[in-house]
Image: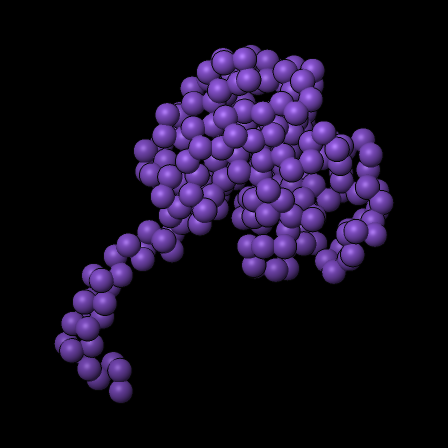
Length: 212
C-alpha cells in the first residue's frame, strides 16, 4: 500500500450529501475482485450519458458535461471535497478501490458511513472529517479559485489552504501509523514473518503427521 505522508493536491468538489457506494461504483462492476481497473467507472452513472457495463470502451462513451469530474479544471484532482454521509449504502470495498484507482488520495467530508470510512484506511485513502462550516468555506473557495489546492500533512493532522488557513483533523493513532507506513492488513502481518516461520517450524515438528 502506498504511504500517505504529505499531499499537495488539486481539489474537486462533489456538492452532494448521502452519496452511496452504488453511485461511487455501480453494482454491475463488482464482478472483479482485483483492486485495479475501477477508476474509469467511478461515479459511472453520473459521469457518462449512457449505461455502463463491464468491458465497454469508456473512451468511446459520451461524457456528461455537467458532472464535476468531467470539467477540465478538475482534471487530475487528488482530493475529493464532498458533503455529509459519504459512502453510505452497501459495504462494498470496491468503492475505495475505484476512488483510489481514479487518483484520489484523500476525501474531505462532514461525515462518512462507518464501513466505508474503515475501508478507506485499509486501501490507502485518507478520509477527513471537518465541521460543516469548514466544509462550506472550502466549497466556496474551490468554486471561486480555479486550480485550488490543499496541503494535507498526516503527521501533523493538518490541512493548509492557499491563504494560510490551517484546519486540524482527528485520526486514530493506529490508522495513522498504518497510512504513514503504507501498511495494509497483509503488510501488518508480514511485519511478523519471522515469528510466523518459527511457529510453523515448531508446529510441523510437534505434529508431523498433519503434513504427511
